[in-house]
Amino acid sequence: MSEVVKPKIGAYKRHLLVCTGPRCTVNGESEALFGRLGETLKAAGLDQGELRVKRTKVGCFAACKGGPVMCVQPDGTWYYNVTENNLERIVEQHLKNGEVVADLVFHQAEPGAC
Image (cartoon, rainbow, N blue to C red; front, side):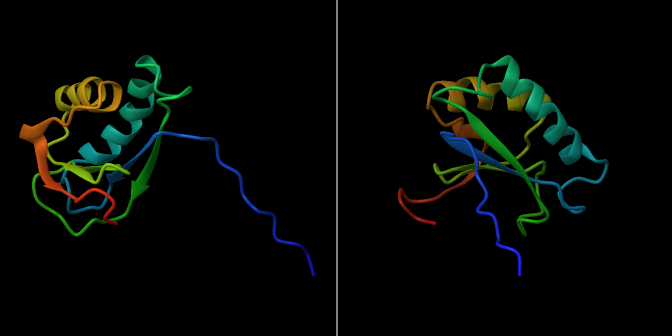
């Protein structure tokens, strides 16, 4: 019987969950957003260091309006209408400076809630 190897992952400050389910967007905008996100984080210096951000595709959040939809953890901030321009705002304002982009938030979890 082979031993299961415990996985390792580097340290990160925030984790972005991007819905790429078929009902979030009809023309593949969510997939394109996820692809662009890696380049955007790298350009902003958020792919390493103290403010490093991890990104993950999610199949469906069951919040199928106003996509692309993205959740920032552990902040519990849920964004909708994450277009290319809005993504730039979220990266600069929220991920780099710690200020939520209020006009794009459709849900904000209580601190410490899962």
